[in-house]
Length: 312
Ligand SMILES: C[S@@+](CC[C@H](N)C(=O)[O-])C[C@H]1O[C@@H](n2cnc3c(N)ncnc32)[C@H](O)[C@@H]1O
Image (tube, rainbow, N blue to C red; front, side):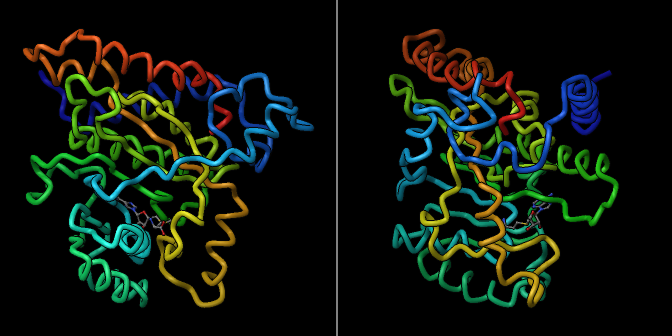
């Protein structure tokens, strides 16, 4: 009998957690604090950075979005990230921004959301509500669409679970469900152009408990491979105001951007794995072509560093 999708995901998460529990735990919060690409992290000294690492710390990364990208944002809070990207491009006609909450709950939780959504819509963006990031394919408006970037900033179930392991587990479930669902909406690699093909971006704070979520392993379970890990540079998103799942709390929420900045947030970028990509292209003459082979090479750089999960 064919197992339902949910049961399959549960089995994957179970085997992932079993493997993860056999690995040494991350030592202390903040130890993996500085932002860098995951590349070259192996063998890094936990004390003073060497010359090569110092160079990496001042490295400027390319802005990972362009006006021509078809972008899907999930798990938006007050839609300020959507507004910020749209304002940068002066156009949001290629963008769909979604929230997990219903429209009325969004306005209750985040009073500034109305302003950001209005501005985003004025620039041609489409806002959607009540969208579960683990079931994107179920939404009629998203079905059959393809995106160059699918972005989930600071995912968190926000259930207020105090038990550490249960908290980690429920967030792992969210990420695995998101990766599995979003991978089906990524644009494919075009024959002859290895730089194409959709990317999934997830931003996370560094330190515990996030380091224990094992984001790269979860992505692999969903048939994705790492492309790069870059700092979430707040200067890239000038209108962005981070929000918690529970909503805006006067006094508590004011310094949220400052709070995430102190946690050295990173953007983890993933691509569909070569095998997943190839199975999409069955029957297509590009199967096994030089473009696919070149793309495989592109994956390997990040994959090689993946055994060091403590970096994320
Ligand atoms: C820490 S908040 C971050 C909000 C926003 N992305 C930001 O950066 O300000 C976590 C977000 O994850 C969303 N979330 C939780 N479970 C979700 C799900 N199954 N699908 C989509 N979003 C979800 C919450 O509604 C909340 O907006």
